[in-house]
Image (spheres, rainbow, N blue to C red):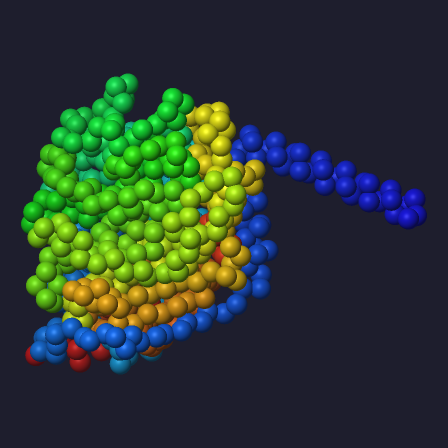
Amino acid sequence: MKKSTRRIRNIVGGLVLMGIVAGGGLYLAFPVQMGTVAGLCRNYLLSMNAPTGAVIIEQNPAYRGAPSAAGAVRTRLSTGAEDWPSYNRTLSSDRYSPLNQIDTTNVRGLKVLCTYDLGEFSAFESGLLMVQGALIATTVYDIFSLNPATCAVNWRTHEDYVPTLLPANRGAAYLDGMLFRGTQDGRVLAYDFKTGKRLWETRISDPKLGEAVTAAPIAWDGKVFIGNAGGDFKGGKGRMFALDAKTGKVLWEFFLTPRAGSETALGPVGASPLDGSTWENPPGIPVSGAGTWTSYTLDTNTGALYIPGGNPAPDFVVGVREGGNLFSDSIVVLDAQTGNYRHHFQVVLRDWHDWDASNPPVPIRTMGGKQLLAVAPKNGYLFGFDLANNQLLYRVPVTRMENVDVPFSGKPVHFCPGAVGGDEWNSPSYVPETNLILVAEVEWCATVKARSERRLKGQGMGAPWSGMATLNPFWLFGRADRDNEWAGWVYAVDADSGVWKWRLKSNYPIVGAMTPTAGGVVFVGDVGGNFYALDSATGQKLWSQQLDGGVGGGVITYVANGAQKLAVAYGFSNLQWPVKVATAKIEVLGLEDYAVARNAVP
């Protein structure tokens, strides 16, 4: 080798080494900021040759069909359906819209009416609201109001604070002229709906323990219901709160893990059967987990508040937390007025995969007359519980399963769904005309090697605490498979029998919320930016659009200026997901020159 060549290589090697050292130092000093820059550059490179969207649709020959709903009467622009006033439209979370101006016969005529570019790179996972003539959305730092027909900005309010390791926010709640949202530094904020002026703030969690308020609250009867995330950090523990909507005062608090004697309550504590008997942790392994990070469901007829509880921690090392680890991986049912415990459904009985009960469940009155609770956690199953006796009716796999019972140890284990697989923050939805539950899933497997108990004890309080033996910050929750091996699913499952009728496989995962309508259409988007309209009875693709960015937030439908419209939140630039990097946007679509008169009810 020539001396000049060797000298050049030495210089290049030295510069690379200096860059690694400098980058590592900056990462340790500013983990969120450096992680964001590095992560977005990484995702940009990984997604450069991303394939176009493709779907495969399959019908189930074993499906025997639900009782006919052919006699059902449809109306146009049903009263009370014009808005989308809560995260899942209704407090009961079924996401079904009675609107049917846009239907299977005309959906191909959808056109983009306007687009609002937020001008920032963000893990844009916000559920959208349309209420009182305004579109409302949030980012990690902002809350804003748009004209729902033109995308013109009414106001936009910015907050400054230091976010957690994986910044996210999933939306706002509306009640009585006020808006409510959580922050990454552990607060709940209230704003004036018309002006965006902040009205009050209440701190409900400790950011020093990695706790944050990422979930979209819901609001009812003068109360705001919200809990904290952070169950993947050492010492982070989930709690649920009801706040007074006018003042922010804590009306009640409920602990989703056993309350330690040193933990101070912020308000009256709801009655609970929970004690430390289900968490057999040795010294140095504090009880951690059961954060709540998506949103909630409320049955206003019974006052039952349904809370999805996250995974226990350390996520992948089950041997240091023997027992059932209640109320992690559970749907906890509380009395909305008092915060007192009513019941719980633990959907993952012993979790070492990070398989949260992640999103709000859906209470359904089925065509067969059952009162059903549909639950879709991250473990890849759809559960149907009979609310008459709280018994399990069925458990249906709705994504790829592999090595689900293999214990983790010092050797790597490949398993599906991975820690970011299954059903993330989108709830199931229900179509009453066909009795079908629709559930969207992620097929993305991962490989985990468990960290030793000694290393777990040595980590500081508030540190990421997954229990993954790695130095790579992108592998904290397992080494995910390459993105050419991932997929997404939509399953349509009979609500009474649990038998699937049709299923769709996308070549990209689906994390954003989907929306079925009385027009026989379901709208869904994937992280590759493919936005689809499907026939909700058959899964047939009716229309599609390629968006400039992945769909990570909500898809909603509403009425503005007398016509049905859609709005979709996209631009999903998330550090964990190797998808196209794009600024966050909201797009509004509708039918051009739609004649409302021709759809009027006689």
